[in-house]
Picture (tube, rainbow, N blue to C red):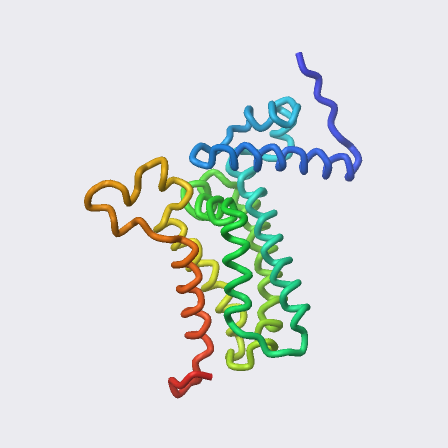
Length: 224
């Protein structure tokens, strides 16, 4: 019988939560088609299953927490890019290149995002989802005006709008190209499915570049 001693110190709780999420991320990365169960994560983390439930009420909430970490890293990368170009006008390709590099180097970012915004959401407590979205909203509110400072052609509010559209487009392209499952399912290799055999990174980059340029069109239709 495993005796669970609840961590009472804030730093102990944070460390244990980090251990759980590290184990969850490693298991999902190893088998992205089958999301790890709470029991599997507990075993990998060296904890009792009941301990994991003290931190996350469901597998889906645990997956959302991993996705939140990736989202925070993506915003940190954007912050670094904007800080490096402070006071200078930027080109759309700089942001698109940076985002595409992150998305391809961290495939779980979009993979988990697609899950958390679809079927998984039904098993995530609304308050937990609200907390996640509130954190994202705060980052958008912070970075939106900074984006506008670096891209004079963007209209007021355009910074938040183009960041929203970037994420939405990337999620859609991920689901369409299905790069995580493509090899396992033979997508694009069977007769009649060749149209789905896409280069995800190339399509993502080209599409986002067109999207950013579209947001920076002048009101008269000319390029800003």
